[in-house]
Image (cartoon, rainbow, N blue to C red):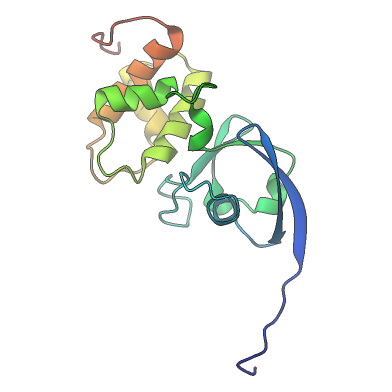
Length: 175
């Protein structure tokens, strides 16, 4: 191949429903959702770690279920509602319950894994609004963190449950 020539790749015009907004983008068929979110839509809260679906840093909600955006082709995400970490805030822009809980419980250090934890916990609490400590551990088991030791993340799950329910002063422990 000559240095000046390029193989052009067919692109597809798609509509993605992201954080409550319909976004139009033209992408190659093989573009990953994580790349579209970060590079095309400039939603850089979704982090890309291992690019194999193992670490969980790229987790977003797809119709309310946690999914690894590094394993999902953007063209296949057209018919779903996608929520990134940016979409977890309250309508007024303030922190949502899981975000507040992470802040209050010091559930993050470097922050790289945090978006994946926030989306995973949001989905987990929708399924189980009052998790035990063991259930909280199971809820986050698919996400990797190299900094925290997980104790404060588990505590944040309980605190987020309290905040979402509108109860507690934050001093209660999970059952």
